[in-house]
Amino acid sequence: MATEVMEVGDYMRDPRKHHFSPYMDNGGTTVAIAGDDFVMVASDLRLSRGFNIFSREQSKIFGLTPKTMLASTGCWADVLTLNKVLQARLTMYSHEHHDVMSTTAVAQLLSTMLYWRRFFPYYVSNILVGLDEEGKGVVYHYDPVGHMEKLTYSAAGASVSQIQPLLDNQIDALNMKNVTPPKMTKELAHQLIHDAFISAAERDINTGDGVIIHTITKEGTSEEKIKLRRD
Amino acid sequence: MATERYSFSLTTFSPSGKLVQIEYALAAVAAGAPAVGIKAKDGVVLASEKKHKSILVEEHSIIKVETITDHIGMVYSGMGPDYRLLVRQARKVAQQYFRTYLEPIPTTQLVQRLAAVMQEYTQSGGVRPFGVSLLICGWDIDRPYLFQCDPSGAYFPWKATAMGKNFINGRTFLEKRYNEDLELDDAVHTAILTLKESFEGQMSSDNIEIGICNSSGFRRLTPAEVQDYLANIA
Image 1 (cartoon, each protein chain N blue to C red):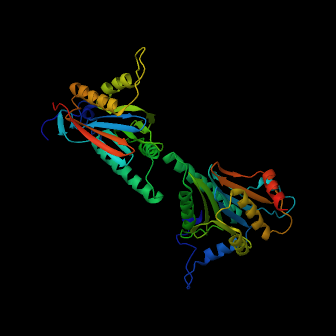
Image 2 (image 1 turned 180 degrees about the horizontal axis):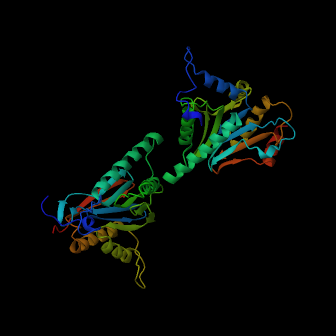
Image 3 (image 1 turned 90 degrees about the vertical axis):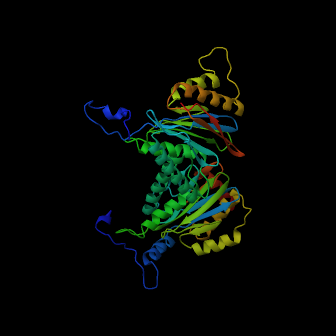
């Protein structure tokens, strides 16, 4: 490779020496919003490392079952491996059970899988989305070692600091006085996701190029791509 | 365990293709106290005879019908100590499953995993097969299940069955008495009658044990409830 910005890991120890870090930050941002009978999950399409762009067409969203999807960002190698292993576990489950895994079961399984690697973690920020057994939309947010929280909306990845407060304010009417939270609809979720990514792409070099939005309802899934600035 | 010294299995084929140790294990089961299981439309009943060898035995300290999870229960015919081990393993398997999937283990999954354990003991070094057959009942979402697990590791789904002493007579009795429209109460009644066929002496709430499984889950009947059912057949 040509001269590149030194990875943060390289000089974390002694500034005079090279230190190998097994982790790499490949950027990317994901957002998910749940409603009473749908869930929407979106990710940007940029894969990067420092100031270099690896791809402008890399979606960070993986389909697991007809009712469940996983959005993962962070170290792309770990993202791919985690997804591979999770797919294998899903297949084994459906072989043994003659049935597809429920969203809540996948959520718990992912949590235990991440914690198994407590002392050499998957460097991945996960958001699991899906419809629960009653058809209600659910969003599960994870930390790299498997702490899991069930929420109605969440952001993760490079631009999480910019997007999460925006969602807190607009969806739950947090940090405002005399405002009632709106009812969540597909149109509102779509508009929020659209605006959040446009704003994040303005300020964060690791987010941009495009957004892909998946919507899951009991009828099935649909996807949509939106262009973002490519600088 | 003695597995470190023995790398070879003690369960080996005879020239006729039988695994004689398993046949002997089944003989140990057939010599054990009778157990009965009946599946009704709205639940499952497990019943077992609990004859003690001496009148000095504290009957209510021995429990044969055991809870594995809120919705799965188990009883046996054969060797008590072997049974205890399987109960512990079944409970552990169920909790591990819950830890991984945050869902109660489906009855079929528990049966498969337990049967796999029993099969291991027919093909591992230095161990003998379990001397018990298990009757496992469960309620998943909206339907009842009844399974038998044998020392060989084979498992069978049943509508109604008997195990232990006199099991052939028990099964013949059930073939005549069983029908698909039984409700749980009728099934308990029929289970008691089946046990009575091979019972020597007077049945009481001290020497039989009954467990029922329905949409509210699995539980053992109290001696008082058992007494109520017994009163209806006298």
